[in-house]
Length: 118
Length: 112
Image 1 (cartoon, rainbow over the protein chains, first blue to last red):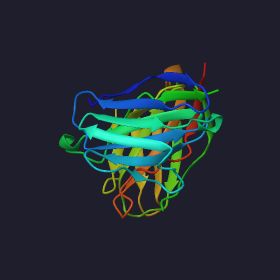
Image 2 (image 1 turned 180 degrees about the vertical axis):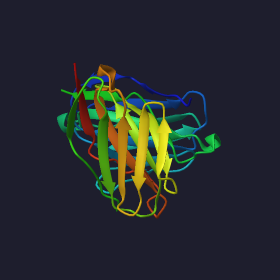
Image 3 (image 1 turned 60 degrees about the vertical axis):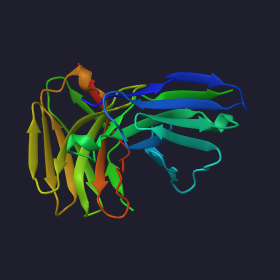
Image 4 (image 1 turned 45 degrees about the vertical axis):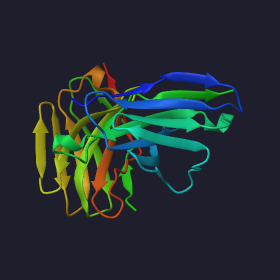
């Protein structure tokens, strides 16, 4: 099946620094990837849709200058949290679509990245 | 936009059946997915149903869809302790949004 990885799985950073999270599709090419944020005991909140070779589409209320998304290749999308603050601490999950699967609407999720800003 | 509602908690005894319910609002939802999330992990795609189907069975999992009432359910037969997790209902809207919308998730606890 389609496998999506994320790196790192956990990261702790100091307030004011930036941190980059990578999302990779391991065995398929993903033209579209998604970034979600999940607070404890809550549902997933879509932050942005990332399309290979073009600018990401951000959901309403998500600061595009704070959450930088780059989808430079068909297997890699990155999310950079710039000037992180404690309120950015969360579980970030990426997902990808496999357009060659014949069920192009399905999304395969990475294992998530736990970000803690101190 | 689409609204998806699920009950927050469900407890069952090991060996019993679990039924997790979901209601949604967007009638243009074409694919309806169920995902499982274990603590500290990402989401695992469990199963899905097309909107032109009423039922789909996949081993211990049975999905029922009442399109008229916009009601979806996931039945897990012979529930095991390893089934304890959060289950998310996620309709895919083929309307202008063209994205998955997640319910709040149902925390399933399987008691020995």
